[in-house]
Image 1: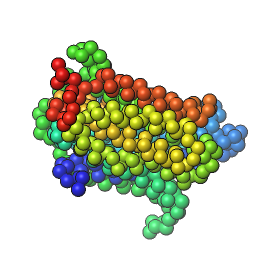
Image 2: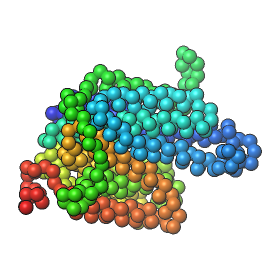
Image 3: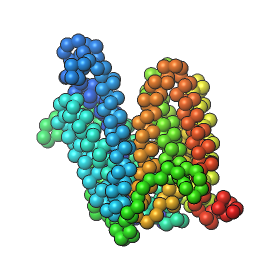
Length: 435
């Protein structure tokens, strides 16, 4: 089996992240409907703002679609911008497990508290709390996965971790949709709505992840003993005269993640262009996730043997046309194929880039280094929908052309600024070996 040989603690972290991702991804489906049907409908149901499909904030009428977008994006931006700080703090303290548990606790409490939210301000406060929770948990988790690996297993470890995370992220919205659709539910304590059931499951997921980490995960002794003091993030590489390779990988990850996020806001345009319904849109959306689930582990493990850089370069080479093609396809089958190829490209980039950054991280600085990549990924998936919503007003092709240009820029950056870190890679001659 592909998972044989993976550290038990890494498997526990991966499984815990999968369960937590199911609960968190619930909100992609649940929160817009909850805001629209319960919170904003009650706040704006009367008066001119309510009649126009909006509500008043501080006396100003605002469209409900804008308010929902702000609530959804707030989590991503707080999570992303907080990660470098929490990653560095976890390096200084050397207590990865404590940060993970604190983050999971905040995520769980906030998920359950939505049941009691009766105002838009309360929802925003809970989204902010979840953003802080994710910022605490994600860098420490990724750093711990890195520190539990060796140079020979790092790519495989990140492949396993990302696979489980994506399974949770991919299936969460589907389960949430069924929970809402089939509600309300009769319970011994009374009837509960589909929204309450979904928030309860999200809370249960965070609690289960908390228990798994608390019981089966421990900090490596090296982390406790060697937490670094000099944890500055470099932009340039003074020795090579170019960009710092980890910073370069962060930029490349940002461009890749923007390409992933472009698709999320285009369902109305895709329905008209491809003459399809929500089921086909869901399949097209899931194609990237499916490809990642299939290829993350084998590609991550292959990068341990054949090197990180070949997969990074090849991934961006494939990413450019797969993104651009989505602006020109005219059938649902063509879109599914293009999205699946994009997913293969993402799998070729993400696990090897995390592994390469982990190779370069010194003892006690994994949180600082790897948070650059996790921050970039979260920021990209938040920027992507905003960018596509604006660019599609100029024509359907423009969001995907923009994504293709960013992918090409990522290719140039990786090819010129990132060197191989697996010194004994089979069949690879690294730039360092040629000198």
